[in-house]
Length: 137
Image 1: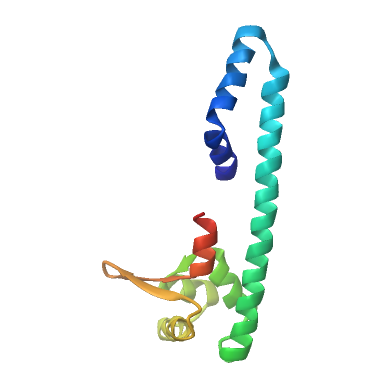
Image 2: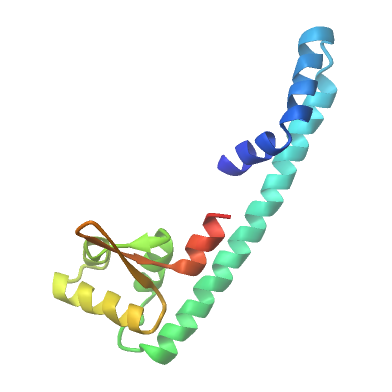
């Protein structure tokens, strides 16, 4: 529900105005319509975001097939889009790979600029930047 919360925060004055009307005069209609507009707006945004994610997945699938055919699998694609970042441990666990193989996969994905490696402390994160950017806007 973060999208809905974001909508309410962006339209806070209107939201509280209608809520106060409910308290003062029992006028529910305007408040309910405001909430329904919020649900409609955020639903449309979410649908749009799902379409963009689907397109990003499709583009990544095509790139993997063309540039890294030995790594290509639907499981790898799903793993890259399960979260906006991964770690060697996640890839190892989720794909049933040995640690050296998971490390090689992620290194090859970095070399192909499909993910970007970021070190934080002793941990390496492999960021799916297009997905990260989409989800953080």
